[in-house]
Length: 85
Image 1 (cartoon, rainbow, N blue to C red):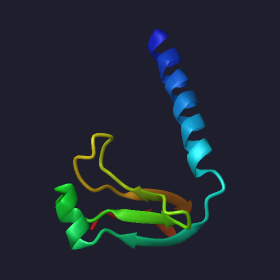
Image 2 (image 1 turned 90 degrees about the vertical axis):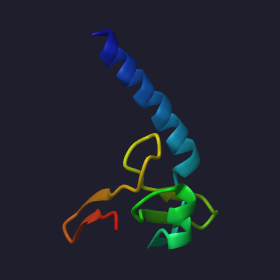
Image 3 (image 1 turned 180 degrees about the vertical axis):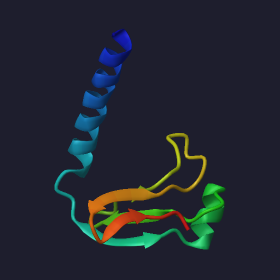
Image 4 (image 1 turned 180 degrees about the horizontal axis):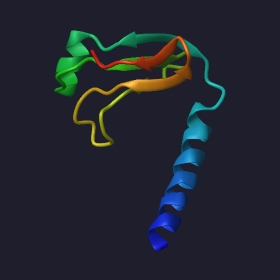
């Protein structure tokens, strides 16, 4: 039971942080990492990158340690996934 309470507490903390920074941002473009960026990260694959008009970016990673590129899933019927390439 304590583990579930901890998970819920983490979810609340991270939701608050994410909403403080990301809420109401406007997407400028979506692209995949350049080969230079892939090399700089030391990754094997190119991840989708969401760029916002204020310069903030979101880059998909396979895990929270940033070990390699990841995919983004959506609930849109015509675009269910932005794959790692």
